[in-house]
Length: 140
Image (cartoon, rainbow, N blue to C red; front, side, top):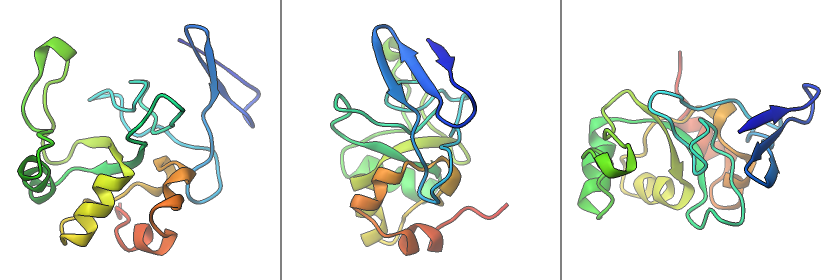
């Protein structure tokens, strides 16, 4: 992977595919979500998305115990390690690029994890409002 750009319009080159990092929900450059654990659909630390990302992993969250239990209960176990994929499992306090529809589902169930707005891709706004995200913004 190679990152190029002039500070305004970064591009990430993965293999032969070139995609722009994009904008966040605040309209500024998309910040990284996490490199430990390595997150993002493209596992580049960024909640960017593309046509291959059917789940739209665009919301950067701060995992909570309540959310992880909820996610496991609805069939998406993010806590258990999957060594063959190099995934150690999430723990409370980890940052993770979450599918926007899973975040909305958690919101409706009252267990939406806190959001890092600067690292949440603008396309999330197709499914949830900025106000909903701001109400769950991670402070500090």
